[in-house]
Image (tube, rainbow, N blue to C red):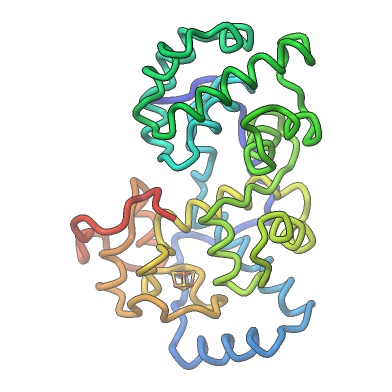
Length: 297
Ligand code: SF4
């Protein structure tokens, strides 16, 4: 399924990326140990911001296809899809939203929805009763307080039922083109693993990364990091030996560093490109069967 009229993500704001045709050097255990020691000792602010800038450029080259993986054509549709994505996968949400968007095209339609019918339509995404409450409540509030039009400020969005700060930033960044950092489980896990921040609280993480990354890149950095977490830097077994970020990552070695073993862990449709980035022929390491779900945190 495609999103023909999905709002374009803010591409191109990140500085020029290295040529993908030149394989990116892979870290060595020694260089990784040195970097890990430096980060653990409290990396100087200038060194960290330069390292983050290099990683951002590399992420842009590694995931030129990064975008919001929820299908939508309007801000309201994105709000609905994001509410449904809680404790679910984007793929599953994208499988139910075409019929849902057709049945409920406006905020008023959600406000007046028959609960049983709505719950049935979103049942497969899980937590369907809570999500139906959120959709009906959100539709009612948008009709009553915003004349049926989804607002476009963080303050107004988070005041709507079912919309927290994470969801609001997804909507702002992807439907309205207003830079926002989306801190989900992938994002928080990766930026801590990379030593960009030690904060655990999502709002503190958002502010810490906002200090490190230019505002114009906030939406795209969210996509890059989430793409890397789903395809390469998995929670349990990251593909370190096949990772383009290795030389700047203090956690290099958390997963296999052998290139062939690591390549088997790389997931997703852009796998040939991801392997080419680090000079591994695609047919040398067929993907491992099973493994982590592409959406698993
Ligand atoms: S896959 Fe390994 S080297 Fe790459 S970012 Fe994750 S932990 Fe670091």
